[in-house]
Image 1 (tube, rainbow, N blue to C red):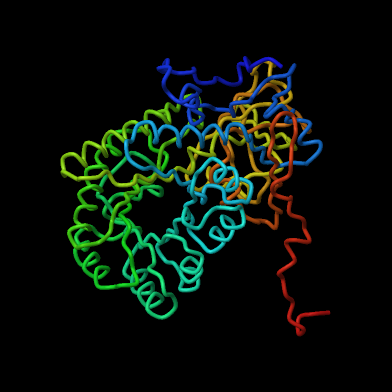
Image 2 (image 1 turned 135 degrees about the vertical axis):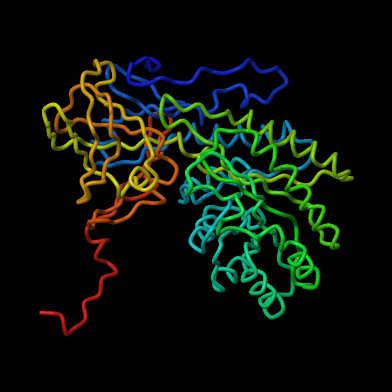
Length: 469
């Protein structure tokens, strides 16, 4: 098996030489800077992931098909874990932001790499618990948590990231009536830091639905200090997602450490800071995100410096919560080509058997992806085509200007970097069943998500008797 040299893809260089004392994981390529999973190879004309031919996987499991590379996912977990341990003198904990892709297999792999899990719903809590994640490593986020969800988190022993007064008041009521132990709480606030990313995935600016306004923090900490059932373990802030800049994270360190000292001034046992995630990934050849190591070094150095300026006697426990950059480039989605429509002098449409129901990001965020002809990897790129989805929407376009070899019905295409927010945001639009997902490693593939069927779509339908025949 030869490494990929096809003109269809460009892989990132291995990066700077690392001193010998660095952890082995930090000497490897940073997966978030790659277009393809780390195990991607070309065997003849066929793209392989994890030692498995993509075309053979489609033949066995059908398409569309999410193909998750276990080695890449584990390598990314290790790089985050080891980089924070290496660059931060205090205690660290990396959390996987499971909203990117919450399923048993992904959570179990993250947990086996010593990561905790960031969750935002009861479903994600239960998934993490069933995957074997320790409750003390589960942190529950959300701007409108229900009482039932908060009860589940409290009873399970998870930490709860209080986003608003509704959270705090509900937790205080639960703590005084339903538990004999203190509830671990982190306070999320908006740090007022702008970053260059899509408006929908900015979360750090003052005008955000997430987190307390910083001007209300005195009242927040005063309230918590009067609730014996609540233990404020720290503070949280997050500035957005798919960020290529390092400076905003440096700025965040100053703000969040100042906020931690404010919490401590109210006598709260606040010893943790969570700086969120947000590191971007390489979706196209033009993208150039920082490496995981560079991001971690920036964050850790900035936090240490901020703590020194605040004259903290002990470094706080440092948490981060990568999602997209942890799982995004570990996965490709395989599609089968169907119809082809040529409009002379205008455009060629190449339609595939999926689209906005398995990847809603292009129609939602105008996201751009890279595509490869998985069975024609050495063929010359002779066509510029628009990859169209099968759904009854004119906007169901996966990629507008894709350069590919000449393709016909039955050819297999692989869209790269689809591990984050593809399956997790998938839908049954047009009553289309969700795809299957397989985990590949060392030439073996195992189903981690079964393909939905038409019968699954009807499982929860109910027909009132007066409408029956």
